[in-house]
Amino acid sequence: MQNTTERQPEEVAQTKGSSLGWLRTYGPDLACVLTFFAFGFLWQMSILAWQPDYLGLYEDAARYVATAVAQDHPDAFRYDSVVRCARSLSELPVMMFSLIRIAQRITGDYGSAMVSLLGVHVGVMMSGFYLLGRVLFRSRFWAIVLAVLNLAPVEAGFGTYWGITNYPLPRITFAALLPYVWAMALTKPRSSRMQLAVILSLFILVFAHPINGLPAAFAIWFGFWATLWTRDTEPDRLQQPTPSASKTRQIIKILALGGVFLVGSLWMMKPLLQQALIKQTDVVQDAGVYGLMGTYGVGNGRWLEFPLAMVQTGTVFVFLSAVAGWVILWRKNRLLAKTILFWVAGLVFTSWCIPLLIKLALDQKSMVSFHLELMRAIRQLIGIAILLSVWGLAMLDRQKHARRYVQTALLLLAVWFCANDGGKLFGLPLKSKRQLQNYSAIAQGLAPRRELIRALRTQTPTDALVLPFEFDPMLIRYGAIRPVAYSERDSLLLAVSGRDVLLWQKNNIEAEKEIKAMPWSDEKMKRICNWARELHADYVVFSAPEAVENEGFTKIWKNDDYQIFHVTPTK
Image: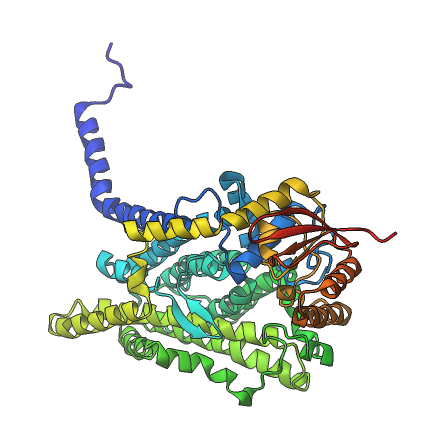
């Protein structure tokens, strides 16, 4: 009797044919995605330079890593100058903290953990924009162009960028996830199920970066209203026209979706709302907190930083081509054109109008950080402009008479990409022998610092409170995993901690300035000792060889560049 489970030769051939057909259809896409991740990995390793640990994080990256360390070691950091303040910006619910803590389990140290996330971010971001391009353009070439152009670190004013830099900050996590949400929102803009999926995905965006995620979420939700002003009979290339529900039902549905998001994200908005409603005081005004606590009114030029940056970086050309791309899209698909227009309106409203109303309501005395951070959300317009520019070129590329204009515009986009340091990105993974030698020299220069970090970890208790004197406090936190008694660089993290904390911070900033202005002497060492005792510090790290022992200090370790002193408790 013949085995019925044995497949016939025709079925086997058909199965093989379907497998080959799948490879022919999606194989190139899979190859592109793998290339994106391989490029990201090479970029990541070019920064790590195959070091056993990484101690070179700069300001923002170091803050996030230090906060992740504190979350991993709550008992040891309970007296840290930032952790002990319940209302610090380190309480923001940011996905990056969890990612760093997970990566540290693999890398073994927190600095390398931060950098090791770069490759994943590059791969996810490029794959996301590639997917968005494949969905909208139906062209692999233009999808790759879209993915590559969004890598360029374009300055957007206020020292912020659109694109990717060497460290995967939360805003880069947000930018890496954003194209997937855009793809869902533009694929089936009238679908109730897709709209619900978009709303749920917005929670992930806000969790990735609340400051950017909230304006983006409002803008994308606001785009749903475009369906109310678009007739079902208007052309829609991505889906066939379908009869829609009554406008009343659509309005109720959109409002309900907005309500779901609002209720679900209130816990993530709390720290930002606290910051927005804190009024400035003389203490805040004089705290010298990174320029974020001064009053920036509308008339002092800060509002102009974004348009000025767009002119300086040549991105104004991208915006002009985006307008042309939107006009072409309007002729092809008015629903999608209106949806993107509503996105822009939503971003402008949340980034400019709401902060301005808060400033006016509080008589221009609101904490400016909230206003400034929301202004930074406008950089998302660069991503929208790149999308519309490439979209317009992809549609023109189908018309033979327009090929010459398309080639010229593509060349100008390439020049703009390279002018904004985009061209340098592709040189990063290909380090020459000389560059690797430079990295070796840098690593040798970091050797004394590594010795200091090792000494702190081996010769001090895990909960020892350390006072850095002219030394990087964040490095003590994420390198030595020791809490810090005070640091001027903590001012930004303490911005929403209230008057008492800010007054404490201000007094210590002034005390530190007075001590640094003194020449090295026994009197200066006594002042440092008394200051350390006031801060309840157990150890002081010096980067000066002039520091000497006295009745309040006992030297426990030194090398050619650094010294560690134990603070003798008062009797």
